[in-house]
Image (cartoon, rainbow, N blue to C red; front, side, top):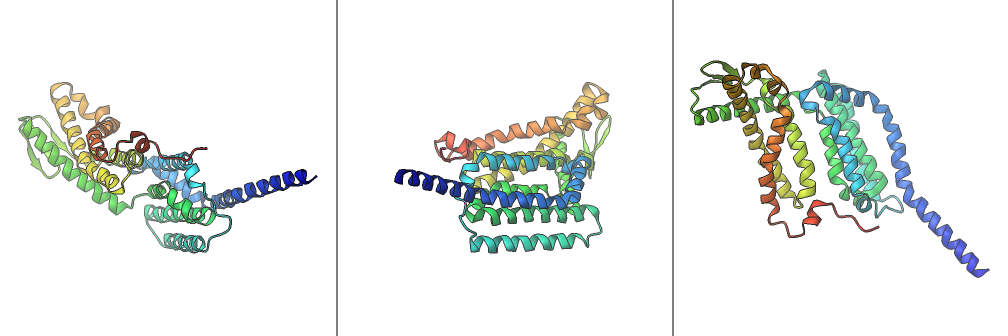
Length: 314
């Protein structure tokens, strides 16, 4: 009789422990259901990503973030709080208030792109605040990269895009001019226009390579989380990509000119010109491989640890 009571008591404790560990998930999914109220800005974000070159990466951000959380689920959810932590409540409340402020500011924006940026920023901050409230500070620290990675959902403000495109235009035209001089091609540079023997090439906004550049940056951020451990090396990886972005676009301009001049004039308005971004994105990614190996060289001998996020054994 005593053994049966002990057994029943142990089972009840196990059931209670299981329900306690499932409570944070329950609360978080309730909040996720409430977030359906934000379906309008989320719908607008999807439309934005499909209609703007510099927003095409947005559709990949949420799936990649969820994948990272799933991959590290044992580490993130291993120490769920038994009761609400006052520090977690204060932190999540501050983030919740900040999200509401951005949402309020979005109501006074006349430009649709800037309004959408503030709305999505608000949604992301509210998601993070809910995560902190439900799972606590330790889980947030373990999941900070995939959670902060969600900030890439926020559309880049128009004035930032314009300045970035201008910088890419200037850098790409300078690189293309230098490469043409190295190849002994007579060229005269006037602003963003390259005057060549048979044709004049203008490095227009559409030729800035902003789409492939953003795709490369997102890829490096994601890959750096697996391949590098120290934060400053991850930062160096992203910074090292900036000259690569400019150089690969300059190479694209020179390649199109050489093919147009010596192979077929149709290359000037062909698929390589209009849709060749993926090819030169891969070229930029290939150029980053030596940089990654250089940054990894002094990070330790345990290759497995750096390639796969550590997870406690089941």
